Length: 430
Ligand SMILES: [Fe+2]
Image 1 (cartoon, helix red, strand yellow):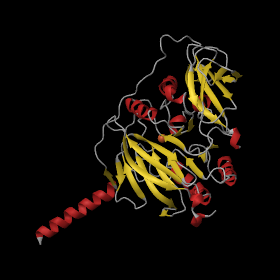
Image 2 (cartoon, helix red, strand yellow):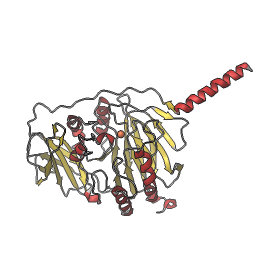
Image 3 (cartoon, protein in one colour):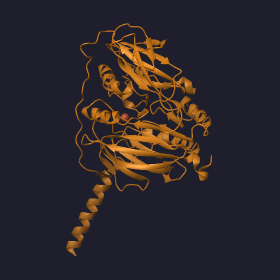
Image 4 (cartoon, helix red, strand yellow):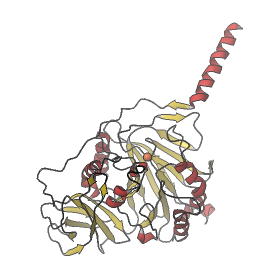
């Protein structure tokens, strides 16, 4: 009897402890790796184009963005053969100051119309020592997206980028937290150089995370200054008045980029814009709709619980996405991977979006490896490892999602699932 009482006491204490923490550690993973700093190559002059990246604008144009340390022409020469530039376009440039830091000249030039699924060769600021090339996305399905959140610039980031470089994707989607500059503006330049080999070749479509805010009370009140200057996205084309949220169509997919760190309540511009944007989706043209936020609306990791950017945004906007039959919602912020079932208002629902957290790009803060226990049934797969996602939208009805783990510097396909588009499901008729 005394033994039983002892066991009961141990059990009660264990339960109390479990209730107190509410979390379990998944398993030991390699630790965070240190930041790497990509300096400007010695052979560069002050007018050499650097930090080149591209993003789609409308159905057949591309924005070319780059930086020069001193003043240089904002001109892009391009054509479909190497060194044979048949077109020249002039764009606009800007710069910004952040405390004592002064940015280089940030150039933006929109080129096109371009043919789909076609390789183009280009140079920036008339500099013939650096030729770049990109491939435009296809006009029709299939299309392959790479998805990575919370990238940063560590050796793990390099590992993730190396794997993505072998993927032959059409477009990269980033659910926020890019450079982890965190007010050290030189880190934005370093990040630009780190991603240039990939970001100059395929459109990188991004939304912002908390590490992009870079606001300092009294001293620097304007949020997102570096992000907005360096990563201008095609917001005007979708009727948005802010670079922090926008949408676009590519192949047969409507992509919605939301801003977790700007107003999202029902009287906000973002909310009204989202409502209007969802109302304009033409399922004949885009049978698939995906949305991207930074702070996840569904999350069973112990990290980032109870944050208003997750909970309040979900409270206000979840119904809009559900009613519009959005297929998938990607998020970052939590440094781990998690896939939910189709879920609405905490309950499994066959006509609701699938929620996926993919905040495991490789940043310096490391992995979030504590999970809520017990695991809710709506959480299908969760693992705290570095990695990236691949979404191949095959046709109007089918898509395949694969999460690749690259914990050991080797990419391993670790979670694969086929999706059926909600627009093709008669039971989910709009
Ligand atoms: Fe974040």
